[in-house]
Image (cartoon, rainbow, N blue to C red; front, side, top):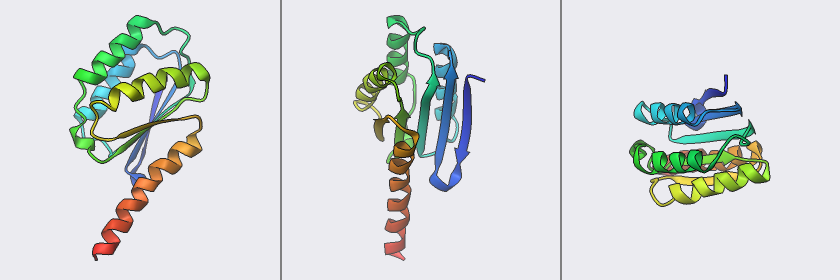
Length: 137
């Protein structure tokens, strides 16, 4: 399976592990389906085992258009999206996506080199929410 989805309710987080060659249309369908349903506030896209060798300009252009115009992010206001991209080429592509999405998405987006750093950043949000509600009690 090129995209494995894991739900972590304790952190209001959905993790997408992408591996091997993932066709652009498959990735877009998974992202759209997630956002059209009842998405978690936070997401983590793990590209550690994702092959980018097959991607060309048409793929990147299609992703950007799709993410900018066809995904409803409104249910994720205040959330965070972490993209884990350990190799230089993955990181460069992820930074392009981060830059474009930051113009439109109502949540924070950040690219990391390691899963542990990404999870730590996501958990900061969960802890802040818990602390915020604890203070009001």
